[in-house]
Image 1 (spheres, helix red, strand yellow):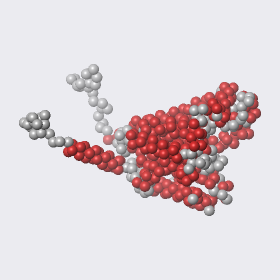
Image 2 (tube, chains in turn yellow, cyan):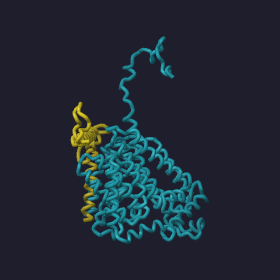
Image 3 (spheres, rainbow over the protein chains, first blue to last red):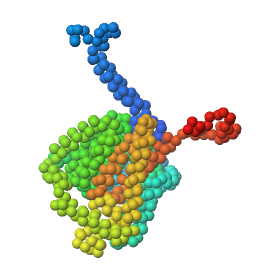
Image 4 (tube, rainbow over the protein chains, first blue to last red):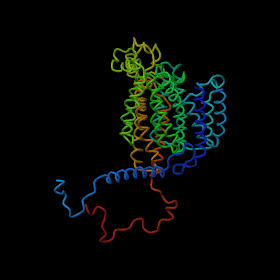
Length: 82
Length: 442
């Protein structure tokens, strides 16, 4: 078991070295690829958009669950409701 | 078998270091931080991997990369610190023991400087953090699984005869890499890696507890408020951490609880009392020799103890602060503290300047998590002899490099042929009668 972990760590080192050699030219703004690819601004923006959409949907569902406002011209309470 | 595979990996990747010199930095970091050769038997145990990779790295840096050492505050302070420990070693009380330790420390610093010179982009920074986490995290993941299987009845130790060999030291190292694992999880596009980093953090947490290290337990507790403060989803993180801690602590056996409870009754604990005695002894040496201290290994020498602190048994100082003070004097301690303060300032700077910037989100995450890691090291290290741990100095140069990248990325772009493109008229528009001038409204 111990040896398996050791080989896993060596495989990890090999993969990181391979990732570095293939992505070194990406620099600070270029896109990275491969197993250790970093999240790009587009990915983060997309996730933020999805999260914001989720919040918006939740707010809309909450609003829909509320009783609809009475049409204009009607009293706020009928005698019965009061 | 292990020996053969490790040797094949290192020697197989060495030629790569000549056309991509940063590979040697990665290999050296892996060997230095994880001491992989200590996990092998046979020929690999006796091969000086670090030296071979180090020479290849230096050659690659000088011949292929040719980048100058960045003279920022971190590098200058580190150079001054190295100079100061050299002077302290020259005047050491036990030169025969001091010079070998000086050599090990300076070798580590030389490669920290090579790393600083070659950390030029975010890909290199990211790859280096992966290597740091793999090198040390190996012990955390393995230890965590071992703890789960054995119910926490056995202590976790690092690789024998290394900086992180002791149970306290490996625990402190794991405390430091946990936030870095979180950074890697946040920044990885691959979903498996994101989940894997969380699992690895949980296993490292178990390993820290199973080390039975009280200092690291305190570091863990001290780190949590910072982790919460620097997390995006504070409530979720707080709930997850509480559940994980509660589960881990309830999982540990009664002997662990007894051990941790001795924190509150440290006056009755021989180990804790011995540490405080050593801190006093280190201070006495420093007061007697304020400029240079006692030199490396002075507190480990009984003759020195008999002279400066009679009645104290020579042993490790067990504090990064007092170790520096006793061995190298007040100036070296001040420089060491300045390096730590600079690293923390770099974190704050990176966080402040990259807030809300999607392009530099990686730097923002790194700043947040490195700050938590450094706090963990400073608190955990207060009870350990880990002053010259190259992992920490590498983290400091990573932060300095990230700061440089952030400054370069946020600087307004200049047109390539600015002078040629500029109109040949007057440099500034001359004020015309009736023209509103800046400050008129005041």
